[in-house]
Length: 254
Image (cartoon, rainbow, N blue to C red; front, side, top):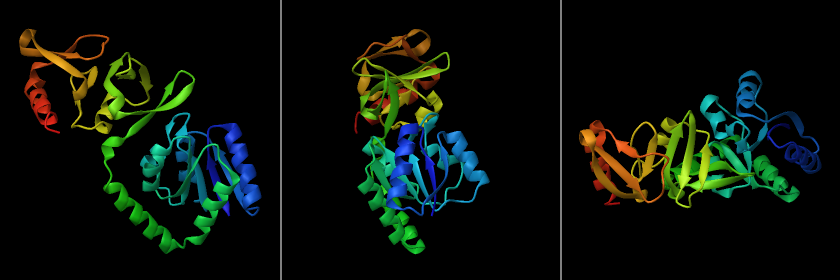
């Protein structure tokens, strides 16, 4: 059995290799990768392994980006410290997911589950999971962000606004905290719920729930005041005023 490990923590990768050797001695770890970029190149230039163990958060971004750039036909067992990612993991052909710190009995269970599934079973399993995912509220998406010396999940409901300055993007919470985001404001615009968030201008995406009041501004523009402090005044340009008003009307009826 050929196994690929994608994990950016050296100690975690060594621990997983040792567990695999104990659980299934015939397993051959063909490579250990630690970035999205290296993983994409590996899948492009190597035959598919029998099984992949994949950490969800890598040093250069979430591992789900791998699936956006290359087709992964191998079954995947995800590893993560945050179980809210489990549902999204199953979307991309995951057989199981393991919460860190990984334990031997959990790896054994996951490998046994993989061995019991035939090719047809796996296809059927993925179809069932896809159906389940389509029924979920996708607006519950969370972001895994670096905060001080930790990685923490930040849900959309925790975000008051997103702001970009000098090519850096931050999400600001209602608690006053600032979280660095690895996505551009344009990318975040596609990830955040359009029912709850609005792209006010080039610098800001704002949450409807964070809006305190609105003032008429010079040149038929609008100035939006939030319930939290902002680095600069939020001005909605004249061309977006009608659309912004409609957004407020629609979102107030949710």
